[in-house]
Length: 90
Image (cartoon, rainbow, N blue to C red; front, side, top):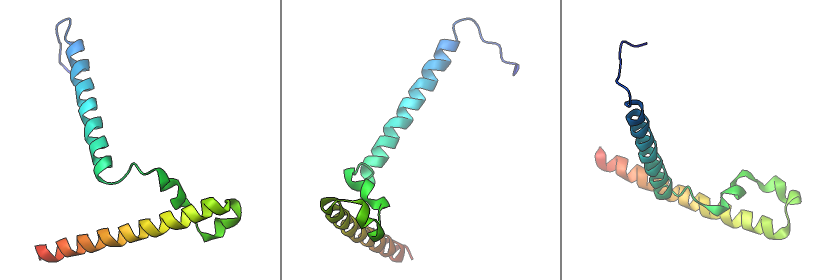
């Protein structure tokens, strides 16, 4: 096909290398997600806005407001850190 002819038994090594590469990529992906706060149980509340109050119970709406406040504060904090890092580089 590509001008490469392997002896019998080599395909298992190709599969093993491919599998190992996939596992390594998965580990790096999970590590990245954990370091970037991607495993947050309350992330589902970020799809709502104040117009959705009638679709939620009072407890859920309160939770939405708390989560939204925390996320906006964290976003501001991260933006300030990035701006400070950019100023330090210049």
